[in-house]
Length: 160
Ligand SMILES: NC(=O)c1ccc[n+]([C@@H]2O[C@H](COP(=O)([O-])OP(=O)(O)OC[C@H]3O[C@@H](n4cnc5c(N)ncnc54)[C@H](OP(=O)(O)O)[C@@H]3O)[C@@H](O)[C@H]2O)c1
Image (cartoon, rainbow, N blue to C red; front, side, top):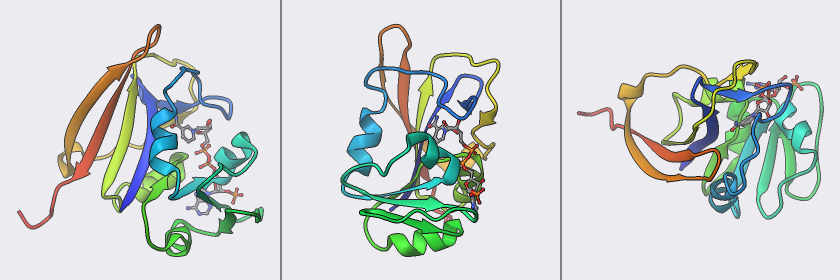
């Protein structure tokens, strides 16, 4: 399964000043649950912001300027190379913008957490895509001060 996983604001923002512009206790739990034991592919800036490979999963960083290598950590020069290197098992593309844009036509599923917040000064968005290509499952709404809703976009089969 090739998937992507993202959290976005009401106004479609995913980043500001190199960071995720909210901190919500528990919001990243699903990310950990889905990706542990599997593979995460991320852009160089997102990786550098985290600063280390995520534990207990394969980390593939996409970069043409830097090379990261270590336990559970490799570098690829393109998304297609990253997907090839990932091999079997579930693979999750974890941003940012360019990788999401390239991945949307390829993924089977998109795990999108809709965060109930407006970020007027965000500088990275989630790319536009055609909702009609997906069936949408709306899951739980969680959170205290800031609510967030889990949604899963499942690609519709093309032979309808
Ligand atoms: N809310 C969320 O769920 C979420 C998820 C992820 C990230 N974010 C946020 O998004 C922001 C970072 O995203 P970003 O879009 O600015 O950067 P990014 O995608 O993390 O990193 C961009 C870099 O990745 C490499 N790269 C990306 N696509 C590539 C491709 N197709 N082929 C080769 N290299 C590629 C390039 O590295 P080189 O320049 O080294 O070649 C590029 O400069 C941060 O604010 C982060 O916190 C939010």
